[in-house]
Amino acid sequence: MASSAAARVTVFTSTPDYCSRKAHRAFHHVGPVPNISALFRSRGTSGIVISTRSSSSLLTAAMTTEASAKVIDGKSVAKEIRDEIDVEISRMKDSIGVVPGLAVILVGDRKDSATYVRNKKKSCESVGINSYEVRLPEDSSEQEVLEHISRFNDDPSVHGILVQLPLPSHMNEQNVLNAVCIEKDVDGFHPLNIGRLAMRDREPLFVPCTPKGCIELLHRYGVDIKGQRAVVIGRSNIVGMPAALLLQREDATVSIVHSRTKNPEKITREADIIISAVGQPNMVKGSWIKPGSVVIDVGINPVEDAKSPRGYRLVGDVCYEEASKIASAITPVPGGVGPMTIAMLLSNTLISAKRINNFK
Ligand SMILES: Nc1nc(=O)c2c([nH]1)NC[C@@H]1CN(c3ccc(C(=O)N[C@@H](CCC(=O)O)C(=O)O)cc3)C=[N+]21
Image 1 (cartoon, helix red, strand yellow):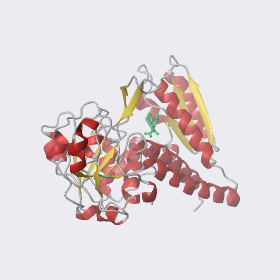
Image 2 (cartoon, rainbow, N blue to C red; image 1 turned 90 degrees about the vertical axis):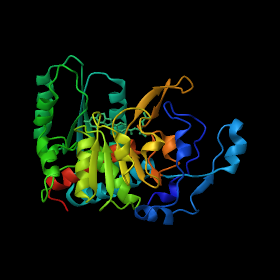
Image 3 (cartoon, rainbow, N blue to C red; image 1 turned 180 degrees about the vertical axis):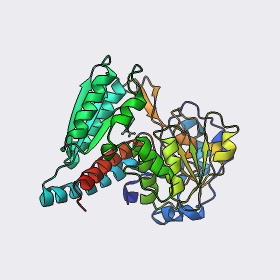
Image 4 (cartoon, helix red, strand yellow; image 1 turned 180 degrees about the horizontal axis):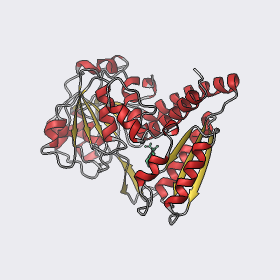
């Protein structure tokens, strides 16, 4: 458990962009709901903290006790998982001499994609996975990408193939993703993998990394999923839809809220577990959240910030300042789901190498 490393929420100083200051006063956390009682057993204190906000409201703040959610520390859980993977990779190498390999294909020069690929490469190195990288110019043809995929499909030292998304607009994403052989589809995006994920009594070869990371966080923080009401916000092929399928496989009762949903907050307020994956900074307000619920924020949205060295900072889909006073547990951004996505990619690559070599 990463609980010892989890810090109490103390960030009351910045006002995230679309947060309303009024909303969080409407709710006060009334104590743990039954399904997350495990969270509180691992906490040292009652979970009540006194918040100190701006100096102008010091007096009122000092008199107000506000509940504060447990921070679900994705960064430290991801580290824990990398350590576990490291041990397994050594065991496999020592006993059958196989080292897992991950190939990444990056087309174009989007800055965010380049950063992600660099982080992934570093993570591979940290656990002893060989990484192979192909960088193609923005104006490459789809055929060139397909040829690289085909070569990696046939290369026995490669156990996982990842085509960094989004691809340039002149390429057909479906054609490209279909070309990755299903045994090496560590992203889990192949329709056959998704189809199996959706069907009872079937097993996908790989579960998509981000949703898998969300469920792993819930498991490692002792959050019960079975029989709980879960709401997924967003229905993308890579996060929302597979997250909903996974939660259902875990015996949650699942609703999906999306851009055409009427009164989304009415639905999210019923949720014991919320997974938000929409890509809208601070869209989910405190008033959307049921007191005591668990909130997993998948959004990693850059917002302009002149004070930050990069000129922007990253915020989630959820208004953290509000939500952390109402939820019983919440993932931060950064340091929440993002690092878990990469850890799950390493996990899937290890699973693949073991399966291909029939190593238990
Ligand atoms: N085929 C494919 N598979 C992917 O899994 C995939 C993709 N394409 N395209 C882009 C998105 C995005 N993505 C991220 C993973 C980790 C962080 C991450 O670790 N973020 C850090 C912050 C990093 C920073 O500070 O810039 C964090 O949240 O703490 C971010 C983004 C994977 N994606």
